[in-house]
Every structure is written in C-alpha cells, then in structure tokens.
Length: 375
Image (cartoon, rainbow, N blue to C red):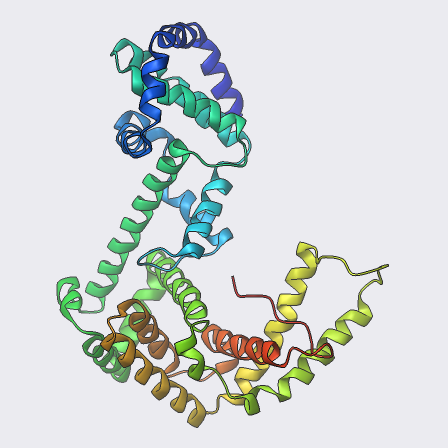
C-alpha cells in the first residue's frame, strides 16, 4: 500500500517532474564537469540531502535499531572494516524492494522545486540519485548513505541520552563520569555492586524502565562484538584458555557433530550449509562452549581470568588503546560476580575463540571442522 501510494503521488506530479527534467538538460555539461570532483560531489550531497525537506525520507532510529539487530551490532569508536561492512549491510536491508521505489519517487517529488529555485546542480543530483536508487537494487549511493546516516546519528544520540539517564539514575553525573579514568570508574562500579541497597536500586530502575533495558541489551551486544574482535588480536593470545583446558572438548565437539550428522539426511557430496543448517551448527557449537564455561570457570579460575583481564586492560590503557581498555573494563565488570558461567555470553565467546585457535593449530584432517566465526 505504501508503494502504491508513492506511485500514485508521483503520477499526480509527473508532468511537473518531466518538465523540470527537460529544463535540466540545458545544464547537463555543467553537472558532468561537477561530477569529476568526487570530494566536492560528496560534500554537496551531504549538504543537500540533510536539508529539512528530505527529513521524511530519512531512516528512523527505530528502523536503524531493527536493522542492527538483524545484521549485528557495531563497536563504538573509530570504524574498522567489519564495522563498515555491518553498517552497509544494515543500510541495504533498510533499502530493500518496495522501500527503494518509495525513496526514489519521494526524491523525484522535490525535483520541480529545485529547478524553480535555479539550483540546477542539486536538481541534477536528485534526478541521478533517484534513477540509481531504483536501477541499482543491490547497491548503495550517496543519497541512500545520507538517509541512513541521518537515522544512525539520531540512533546514536538516543543511545547517548539513555546512557546519561542511566548514569543519573545510578547517582553519577555524566560530567563526573566523563572525567573519571577507567580505574576510577571500575572502583565506582565495585562500590555500587558491593552495596546491597544500591545494587537493588539499580536493578529496580533497570527492571522498571524498558528504554534502559533496551540500552543495556544494546550495550552488552556491543561489548560482545568488540570482545570477540579483541580476542583475535595477537597481543590478546594470552587471554585465551590453555591447550590443556581446551583439548578435552575437541572430542566432545566431534562426538556431538557426529551425532548430529547421523541424524541429518545424507547427500551425494559436500554442499554448502544452508541458513537453517548453519543456525543448527552454531547452536551445537554454542552448547559445547556453554558446557566448557560451566566446567572450566570455577570461582577460583574465574578470579584468575578477571585478574588477567585487568592486567591486560592496564597495558592497553598505558599504550593509549582506550577502546580496548574500555571494552575489557566492561568485560571485567560483567565477570566479576558471575555465578552462572555457562550462561555468560562473554565466557562462551572466550571458550569459542580458544577452541577455534586450537583447531587451527592442529590443522589435521581428523580434527573437527572449525566453529563458525562469531558475528
């Protein structure tokens, strides 16, 4: 219905759009010269598509949230290649099928106004982006990028405001928190968790506020994503479990995979796993890592793990790697009072990374296949 509405509205103004397009032909050469300066083109597209008249076409923070839930959260801070890929996937998810038609026709609706205002370069950009949005159905473009960026920026602002709200509810001003070092913030968190009354108050606030619940879930997912990436770094190898701890679980993984394989329908030859099979395989591997965490992380082993992480956090902070230091700070806060290690996603991620590394090192044909990378 939304697509039909967009088409009907376009048909109502089709003559005006076609007349504007005809006028633009007189300025084609000027626009083609302008397009040769990529930097100027991108700067102008940002200025143009962030004008308020395009606001109804911007993706909303809620849409961005839903797309990230599907494609995976991204770590905050300076973007890396994986972050860029995730955001691009989220953009393309939001610009699927009928939505592209709506965006393209909604964009063309503004063409006559820009021509009447003699803003011919902007009008040409609108016309070109409208065509690209419909014709290149699997690609992004400067217009779609700005529609997504506006929604993503608004989503980040919402996250920031909720974080400040959570800090104030916990009795810590955002200004004070911004001035605290990781050690000071860690000490403050320890005091909060050690005070039964304050801990109960914070739990009540979280339980009573759906927005803060959503923020907590989003923040934890960001931490999990960043933690998984951090464990892939060479300087983090010592954080992984030892070979003696991991080795017994290779046979467990192999047995469970064999059992699952016996129940699966037989095929003529090796075939790529379909999405359903991939999900089942990931669930199987996760059952192994959950049992690993439950078995390995006794209270004493968990304390050793926390101490090790704290030392690594200090090293990262001293080296100026605040992003890694802040990630480990959050991990330590999550693990410090953990009583159900098998249910802790961070410990599962640690077991998964340790298992994956040992399988890579063995690299024998008889070894079980590698667990899929954490997304």
